[in-house]
Image (cartoon, rainbow, N blue to C red; front, side, top):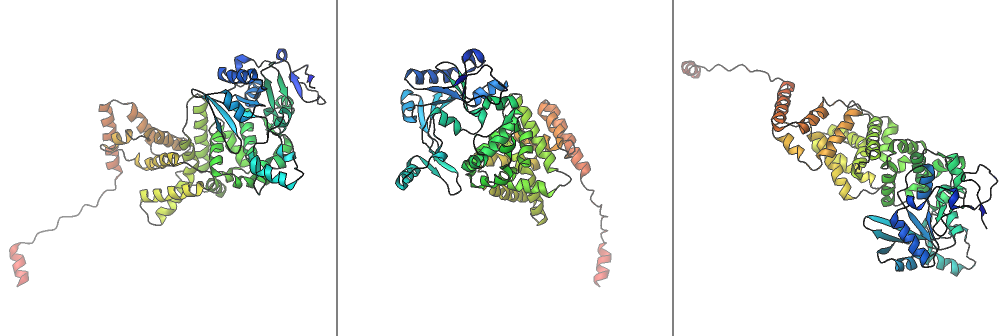
Length: 469
């Protein structure tokens, strides 16, 4: 039995869990829920299954953030849920889920899962069967597959943080708190459910999620939750690079990149996501045309401002920012070895990308535009004759121009190049030609003066003949 809460945020530390918050004592209503998520909840409920919203949408509403992602959890198996929706598909091997699609919106439906860490099969054969069919762990203790189903109470215990173990029951519109999430929201803290070391061992990405929530919600990480992170950060080396690539996009591409970057470095996690960049930052390397940390911070600040104003940003642009200092360093090294400017750049880009994909996989559809942005940093200064018009039509011009502005904003002196391109884009054609002519004149003025050679005096034919005699 759950006891009825008299207050949504009860400061009484002795209160019993779980808590059930009746509809008249909380503000989360069906008006706050996606209509498509409601359809899924009602369909499951009408078919005789339990149906709840869980996690982020409830947490965000209670904090004062508009909910965006609506995840549904139920006691129906994935196969049973899939059978109810013609517009659904089964996905996942690690965690089997159902995705119900409504146009561009996807409602994710998962089944209550048991806490497999607490299960100790008595017979070796039973343990072998459990490993092969439903759950599996790596030699490092990381959960590879988890499809053992259980009750809602067990499901709450296996979630990552307490404020993600809040459930909204569509049957009576109550909020159910199984792990003290409401108290932690009141304290503005992030607390992992269970033993932190064991939970990070099961899934090291939880350390990254703690950082992401701390930056997004402006919450502190509870002391016991934070304590093992630096020591256990190396476990990220055992996470597939493709999964870490997606995590980086969530971490640094959600509008809180600056604070996230600081926290990742503070907790020793950044070096497992960007090893070359981290080593360069720690080395203190700089040169007159780039301050690596100032550049990255400016790039993340601009990205945050874009996202917070409702504009989108491309994943390849974010990665291009974070890897540019390493490209600049390698480019300098290859030029010292005698390579011309552009071949040195191409070699540097290849080396940096090859090193990076060992940590976080970068799909080719992203690595190619990254190379183009870097390449254009050396072509944009050469805007003479017809080149400026040609560069303006380049498919990656706008991204490269924005990148150029970030370089200038972070302290790189490019001789007003960003302003020139800003004016050129806005000017009518006749003024564009004037700008190009001025750039041509400046190029001529900046060119080194050639030594004027004195003309050789031609000898007369008579003098030549006398010399021959």
